[in-house]
Image (cartoon, rainbow, N blue to C red; front, side, top):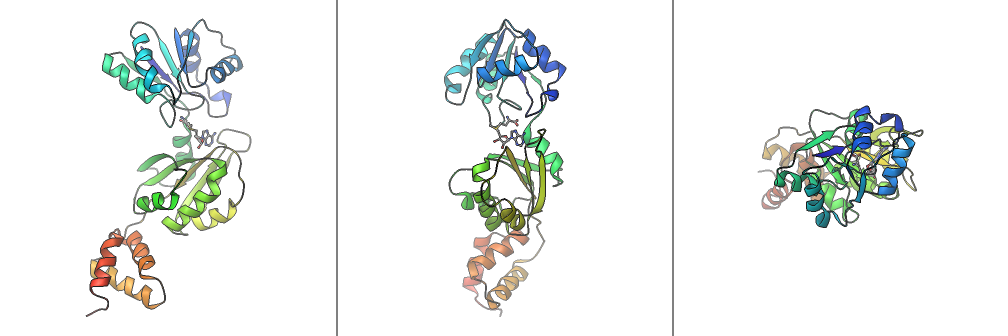
Length: 272
Ligand code: SAM
């Protein structure tokens, strides 16, 4: 059987009795970093006879079938360094391979930074989209693609890139969009910072520390006809905004694609 097991994201007390039992009784432990898992087990006071196999981003494709094969007649526990394996961590390839082989896959659920951050953020939780890590390049274009998404958005981010990403998010989603920077969950310096993206970009300017999840409220879409939306665009242009910016902002509020507003505005520059 393949057992996906979640491990603490900072606080050892979050190790569940089922996690302890799974690790202590495993025949094989597939770990993202075997040293980290040895360290966790010794901190939990667990000993094991299990064989350790390293499973990381760089070898998952090669190792997935082999680990799934081991799980045919042995209990293979798959863990990452912290949180839920497979969530921005190795695991998916092995799970897929196990299903293909008809091997039973089960889970020992537990901490995951994305879900914990969403729940604590105060942003709407009824619908959300987990985006994984913000890409290292082209953040503004990436966020702009997401600007009209009505679901709450959850991103993982490195402390070194947080400041730049908040600026890019502010530019793409608008300075007033509510968001939350969630830092160091379950650890001594846990922080849940709520604010508009404009404020957060200022507050987290410069160097930051710790592990971070950024949660951004979804777009609020106001039902509006194309004509009314165009009138809004024209009013903004008349008061000095660039046409492109006006289209982007009205698109964000109405859900009408910015390019449609732009083409309509060019085709019909002023009201009849
Ligand atoms: N699989 C893990 C999970 O389920 O939480 C996520 C692994 S991903 C490689 C690591 C990222 O998760 C970090 O860069 C950070 O964005 C987020 N993260 C992990 N632990 C965290 C914590 N204690 N507080 C805030 N974010 C955390």
